[in-house]
Image 1 (cartoon, one colour):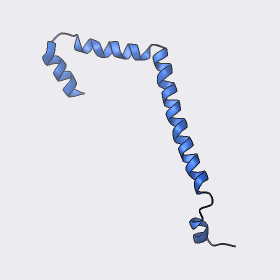
Image 2: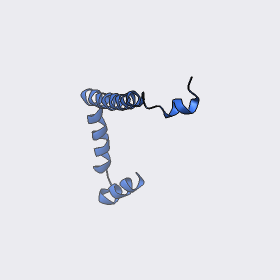
Image 3: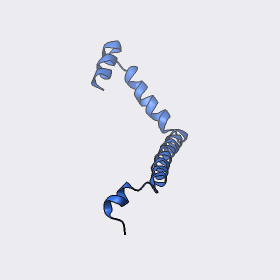
Length: 72
């Protein structure tokens, strides 16, 4: 029976662990892209863009726009 140190130094499952980590990361990225796609499809991105554009077209002109951006 091997000790804990020998078990920790074993490289037999290294590629499986690397595959699992990469697969989880890839699935997370794909889920994020799908969520953004769905948000854009339902009009959420358009709504956010129009709300953000209303700040730039509000009263106060360029000075108010620079102030708004600097507070962001």
